[in-house]
Amino acid sequence: KQEVTQIPAALSVPEGENLVLNCSFTDSAIYNLQWFRQDPGKGLTSLLLIQSSQREQTSGRLNASLDKSSGRSTLYIAASQPGDSATYLCAVNNNDMRFGAGTRLTVKP
Amino acid sequence: GAVVSQHPSWVICKSGTSVKIECRSLDFQATTMFWYRQFPKQSLMLMATSNEGSKATYEQGVEKDKFLINHASLTLSTLTVTSAHPEDSSFYICSASWTGHYEQYFGPGTRLTVT
Image (tube, rainbow over all chains, first blue to last red; front, side, top):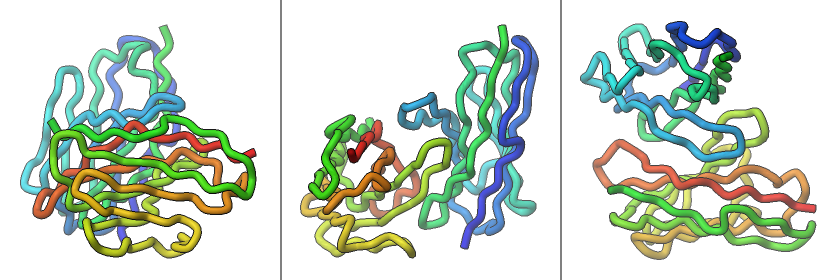
């Protein structure tokens, strides 16, 4: 059964810092990996989707990488802003979608 | 494109009653729909997968007689929480996709509070 782990569980940084969120998974036979943002009490906002054949995806200040063979993905956030404060979830899809527990990010002004 | 809606967005019900949550794909035909549950400060856990016209497949530990799923059309799936108890209070999120497409599109979620 696929296990998804996210490190760290929580992260607090000052505004302007670059940061990296980590995601690891146990079964590399995936179709894709997706990063989501979730604000408190809200649903999911899809940030980036990486297909299994891709190594990275970029959107604005966000860059996600995928190393399928080692079962790892990272989400890089450049020049963090207080509005980036949220929980970031990693999910891997191999028939079923399995989510990590998330990283709760706080960006302080 | 690929928009999924849920109704209601929040609901409060009394213990022992049943509540139905709807999940609709607005601009595509969803051959497969998924139901997730998220307890406070926890991640999403898959409850069940439903294919249009077939019985849902439930994850281990999810009671199929308590969480009734109906996927009678290509645009609508419903989750009915029967005889709800306070421990069923949670955030329920659905997602939808279609055959051969390996991306899921998520609804905005329904917050259920059982008093």
